[in-house]
View 1 (cartoon, rainbow, N blue to C red):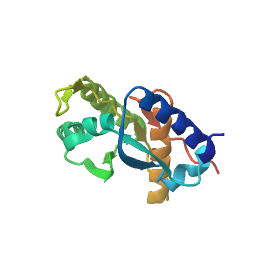
View 2: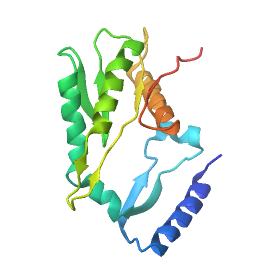
View 3: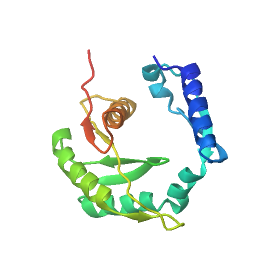
Length: 173
């Protein structure tokens, strides 16, 4: 069980370690704003943490996000839909495709995107990966339930090594 108290203890240790290494926070960020995942992690409030300069360097201009968006648009069929779902999250809607058939195109995107090099404003070259959760819309399933299952699958992909695609579990009766 990893609750808020333990999260803040862990953040304090990381903060002290980074400060000892000469890092300096440049702001604060908030995590765990998605309330649907709180019960899974035993966290029932957002968690605040320092924002470090290295985080800002990678996100300046969102070049990597724009790169992924362009690659996705070029890789999909005309009947497929892609859109930003929030922050750094995208939703892809594949028309007339089950979840197993959606995995192939996502794996190709994952491979192609992770091979791309991006350059921060300071000249640092870096690579970025993504994790994806896939859920097939079931008969009678609400939009929120579908998104929740896809979101759970994405978190499973992140927790089991990142840079992968996981299929959503079927709801239990």
